[in-house]
Image 1 (cartoon, rainbow, N blue to C red):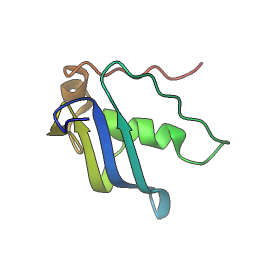
Image 2: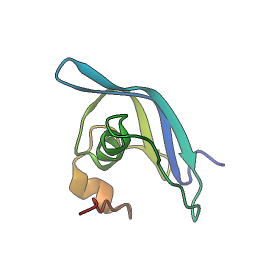
Image 3: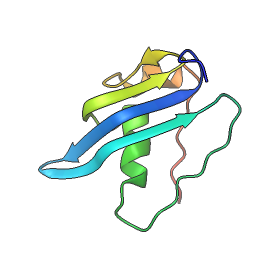
Image 4: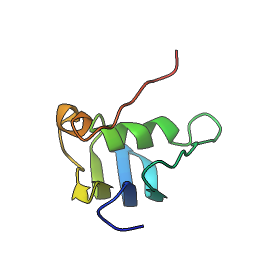
Length: 89
């Protein structure tokens, strides 16, 4: 996959307070590809999605959407790139 396409997460580390929730997550999803994030409660699935959407701030690592590093962007800017987040409930 070209770096200018899709979603790419590189060495992502996100904390809540002193809790190190995401510890070096790597993920690559090509445009049009469907991916599922599975795991038991408390392993960081929601934190990863919140980090991608700008709802949680990673301490290090990169979140690339369409080749742009969006880590630290406000959610409304990320939505403009065509990314959505629909929590269960």
